[in-house]
Length: 481
Image 1 (tube, helix red, strand yellow):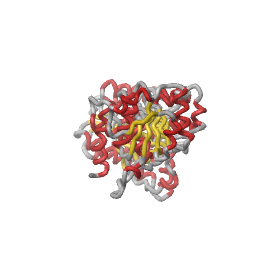
Image 2 (cartoon, one colour):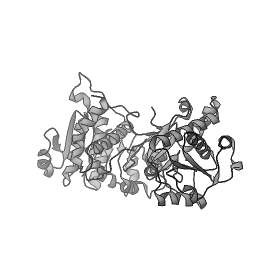
Image 3 (tube, one colour):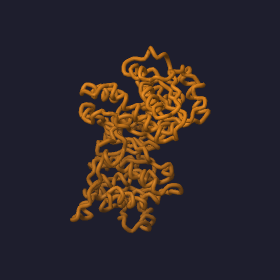
Image 4 (cartoon, helix red, strand yellow):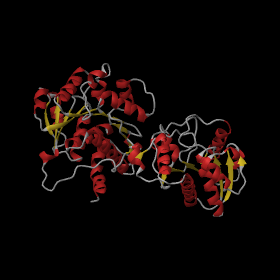
């Protein structure tokens, strides 16, 4: 798997382990600078480049890129934040190999330049840009110069993706060995442009010691249930969708998604007064009276439950949620079911396990866990830890977190997904995968990725009904059919 994400401290550890294994630091820096120079050459016609170097290893990468680009005929202006004699370690070595002029960093170093390489600060920056560095980045923004960033755009926090005041708008960011969370989390992700991961010689074996718990969501993280040649509908699980009496479309969207993703059977349990409406929908869904609910749960073949979409906030829905959990079902607790516990979230948390999935958006998350602090990744991880369930925090950078600290970040969801009913489809996808035997964490991660891919396949004009219909071609492409 190459989907692993390394925190800033883990990336420092990877560097140290590589050097302990016999890979010299100079070789790593040469390879990093070469990757940066290659990306500049690949993206732009030969011209004038300003390389902005900081006082650390990012600056050393910049010195290497400057030397290689000048050798290839580029007109290079190199500007340094600080004094050359203050550089240390490998950065000092690379600076000594640069034979050109070293300017003091200033906005004027951008004059008459076609491209900028931002090698000022790496992912470890923990405070906002200030002084001359801030002034220079402001000038790149004002002039709308194309920028290639080294590691992360200066001003983007490598772990949280937060923009610490300001950062350049980059065409591309060249990072090394593995991405960091800040490359995937909004708003930093938007500053990075295309993220290119360069192999600089760090052996993959260092991951055995680091044991990363974060990953960019994608097929390398999970595997969909196989379709057995001798399979039958009863072997592919039975999803129970608990519907409400007013917003009947939500449960129907969830039910259709569960069927599309491969659940063998799907039953909608709804109030008696709404049964006619539900039965007028998709003929492939079974529709039954939700009362008595104990009798609905008595059929143990209904092994995954979606509860909340259009369910109606209140004590009745809370009681049904707790009943489903007490019956040992793997539950996807969504929408109204989450809000029904906003006055006493611990009542829900005590009933949950890691076989269940909570699917809040930011507002629902706040109702359950309080005012947001930290990055979206940190909030999702804390929510999963506190609740004891898998937590899917919806957004443009949807995070799926397991109570044990593992987490995935989805990076390619279409903005067209921001439409009514989209979350109901997602809940149905998760339950449909759980019903087929996927663990909750993997099912939630796979569903988030498939949901994003279906949204991208439809594109502008998308309505939630389109998502299930787009799913077969996404699955065909994924399975290589």
